[in-house]
Image (cartoon, rainbow, N blue to C red; front, side, top):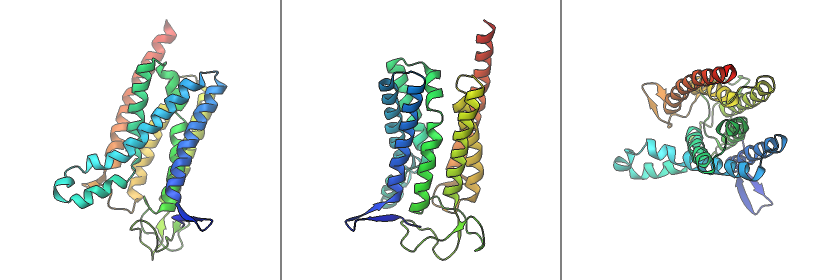
Length: 259
């Protein structure tokens, strides 16, 4: 694995940060392309995408410190380190919050926006998980040496990932899972015209997938309560909220069709 790449011998570029930027760029690009295809105002909707990205970055940066706030009074040095950890679900919450505020202020059609950005979320996240793989975070449990999906990290990995054993390449597995969600959304939305379907597919699929994948995580310093991680708790909340939203959306859609 390569946490850094040497750029012309001048400086070392962290691949985690590089792929995070690539993820945000990919999300922005797909929103722009979908705007052009749908003949939407590219300036307005790309501004929306930028607000979501900004909110997402802020949320990813702040979720861990918020969750671990009690640590501020017991272990200040440890608490400060939480500000360097980016958490996807925090980014998701921050991006949704920023986007919702922008929709209300500019008075954009809610479901048009939801359909527009649905595939951008898993696409950007896939790049981010590749960055996690190179950076040595979010790694999987220790696996047998002959495991097809096992990898060894170098001793200069930037996290406390085990160096002398094979660990599951979980970030790459999750990246592939996110790309699968992108393709599912793009395929289904071409065949089924249902407002918000893309986001419902993503939230439903990812919450289930993330809940399962968390059992294979090997990094223990991510918040675990009675055997359930912070991300699994959020996955359960997202799953239940998606079910409620799905029921509401179906009823609203049927009512509109009958009018």
